[in-house]
Length: 394
Image (cartoon, rainbow, N blue to C red; front, side, top):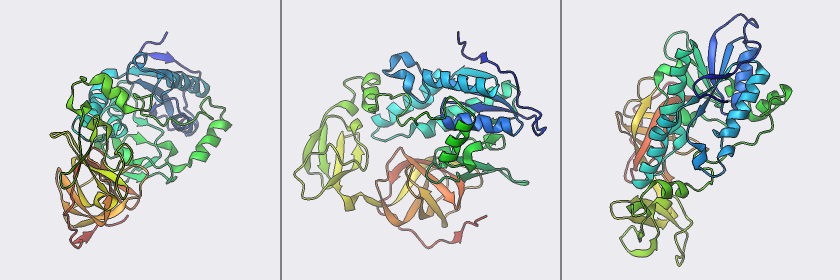
């Protein structure tokens, strides 16, 4: 029987002696192929590897709970991989922290008319922080995960976080909020591989997760519809779930919605018809329960403001030319820092569509992740001044 927080499986070899490093690494193993191969690569490199899977929420309360990336199937698959690799495996119960930092935040953001990114929140506030603390308790010198990103340890100065080699799978976007103290201890073994290469390595090693499909849904919303979660966790009379007006930017009422929590900036579906051209959600005004819509050209804005700023080195100064990524899978776009500090502001060189409060503004210099923040609002009238300096590309 599994006892959360205690070792549940231990193999016959510890990963030492292959190159004499002997450093002990705690690896986050979700039960997917990427974290499985991350653990395998570290074993090959001669580290003493310990696997850890985090129990993040009560699976019994959600339909199809076993199939999520962090569900019971994930725990079982991680354990099977650990057995194959001959490494210890622990399960840690972080449900309380995850509920507070991720699920409660998710619900609160939708209640305020924003669109959260729970994976960023989990990495920044729960997963890596807890992994580091657990690693210290287990006398581990480092921690690792299966993210497609890279950490470059500099001989002098702070470590640098770089994009993954596979740009189609690059996950550096999700790591902007990591506490800086983690970077010196962080290993990202699959960051130099493509997804195909990871699959090949898993098959060569006959890992149980080699052909496991990727999980696409939010782990705590296995039905795929986040509104199911909001309905369960909010009072039925909550304003976010009550009807309200759909309006244009001039205030004209053109329809009624069944709850603004069901909408996000940039959304097209569910807005009704009768318009000469497609309309999109431009803004959500929770204080009036209004969903503001308009044609595509009104969706573009010239800048953004982001709070909860986190920087791995000194923040870029006002007037600095940077690149900012405003959604996962999108290309970073050139911009200029309008204001430093927290919140910071960025003006785009070319207006961008669907800048969404609650999502991330992730700042890059070339391949290097500098940091980022959570978008608080779009700046429709921001004007980008000529950059006073360019950030040096190393």
